[in-house]
Image 1 (cartoon, rainbow, N blue to C red):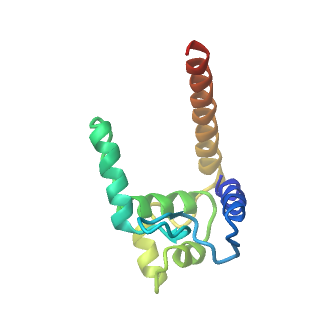
Image 2 (cartoon, one colour; image 1 turned 45 degrees about the horizontal axis):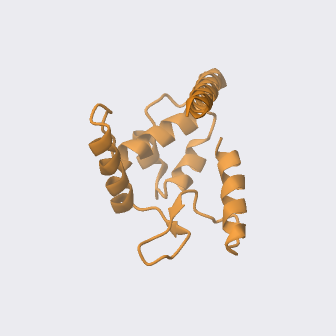
Length: 137
């Protein structure tokens, strides 16, 4: 899923003459000055999350910190090493990363495969609902 996003992101950035490389941030945005490809930061993310909560008060609240924990746990369950996760989170020590990863050190790929299948199913259902809505309008 992240590989697909990286490819799409590189294509979109190329359309506006921005070259992406191996150090390209995964999540970026365009700031209020119109500067594109800016690294996503907690203030921006909190602003967007609060906007979503105002429109959907029934959603469970998350924070950027909780999202970091979720990312690290899912990455570990997907087979990523603690070293790679530590680097992705910019931790200076793997000890910190161990706190973020809410799983044992050894997790099978079957959990990741089930999660990926569930995401694919949800995406397929969402697209089907969107197509159905478009047909009725």
